[in-house]
Length: 115
Length: 111
Image (cartoon, rainbow over all chains, first blue to last red; front, top):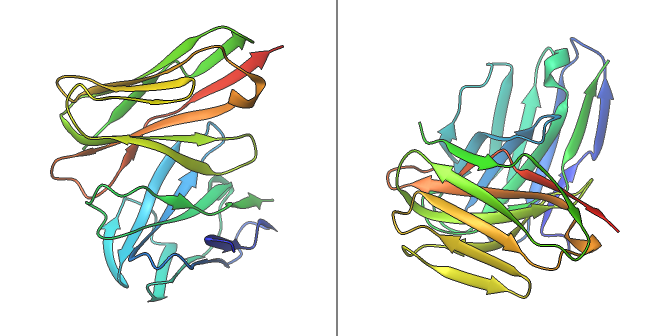
């Protein structure tokens, strides 16, 4: 029944490691997003894909690389993890193009902690 | 780029009282959305406003979009413990693909 599902829910790892977060949506939406939420709860858009095409690519380090194998999946790979990467990462999806007035549906989040 | 400011950052409310959170943009917005995030949870869409001066109600929640489409407010009456959480406004400029989120108002309720 889960609409937007992310794995893993928790990720604890050491500085310098490479990790991936996976996201899948079963809503039939065309657009998917990655957001980073810091400790002050500020939600910052990182990337957005529409039908597997990169639409939004905010200023994030090159260590972050999104990949969308199909419109139902959007994964996030992070290389050489740093302390400042500790945050909650939310995947979201919406119907149609990012510029349309459609609500976004968020996953439960992946809580990333860097030791 | 598009910036959406939201105040206050924190709101401590006595149960039964009313409060309002405000959202302001430096540029005209094509629409504004409101989300609620419970502690430990994820943002959940509440409502969207599109028209200038639009007012929408959901039970004890009243949402308003300014005449100039540069500001919005969320007013909650008779606050309950179930209202605890962070409320985000999110707006999109006319030529923007992305939705810009405000910093959120985190609400705590004293019983």
